[in-house]
Length: 257
Image (cartoon, rainbow, N blue to C red; front, side, top):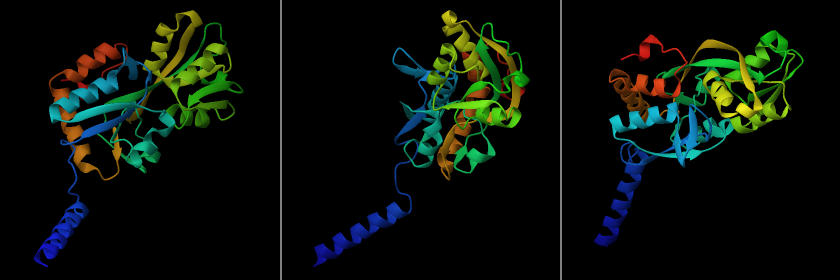
């Protein structure tokens, strides 16, 4: 009888602890990071390892805060939903912090800002946004580029892709006339696709910050990322990684050591 009572009490205590959030803390478990494999220089795979400015910055933050990371590839169009439903602990992919996205996930403090570009093939008559009118234009679904195109050139035909690789393939093949994307990725496309003769015809800086996404209400992890970000800015790591991966982009004053 006593054994039964003790077992019942123990089970009840476990249930209470679980209900009170007695699970692993951010520093105790391996955090799954949802990212992309095909969007250099921000996020990509090289020699079997996930790298790029965003992922290396997150690694540096994790080292400061004693966090263990596991990177997993996904499509950008699915990423924030997967963070929201606990498939990933963190989303890392130059994610612009828009009001719409903030309804579904929380973000770290800003670690960069969005700079967008219009990319075409050499010989294209497109030189600026007005020339996109009536054209087929590739965008990554649900990104700042997607929103910018539909609001700035509403009569352009937006051709939406779930990830960067198929959008780039469409531009190379001539299936689309232009491609709206992050400047750093656009410049990388030019270098990596010399045979396709791509060019960046116009770039424009926005005031939209990038952030690492976490599940809504996960203030413990959000705080650790923010504290680690302060540390890597203060010791100059942010600038070193920026110079390595994004050498042509301006460095905002707030990120200088």
